[in-house]
Image (tube, rainbow, N blue to C red; front, side, top):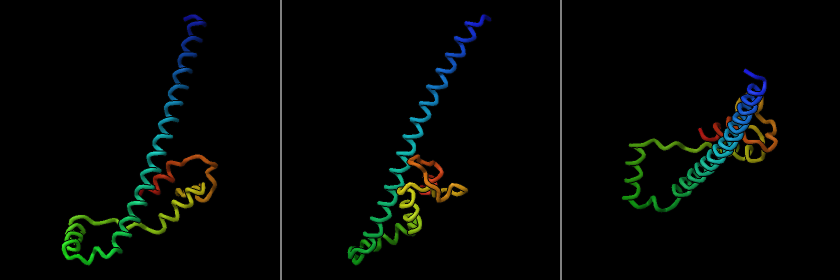
Length: 120
């Protein structure tokens, strides 16, 4: 193989690797955005469940029976106030993931490990 052929192949490989890295970065951004949206929606859903649980609608017997039936068939996961605190800390730019990064500033970068903690 000639030197020029090797350099051409190397340049094509470098171009392919750069494109792949760019696509991976774009996908990471999309995943982070989706996980953040999911966490925000879960928190909002949990808060709405709390609000609906405190309304006078529960006085209606039919409604109360439906709720009791639903709770028996499906266990409802209660939101933890600590998760809300972690979401606030993450929103302020701090790591909340397990390990040595916990409590350190994220410098504006998203962390998939932190987002995983919020989504659990």
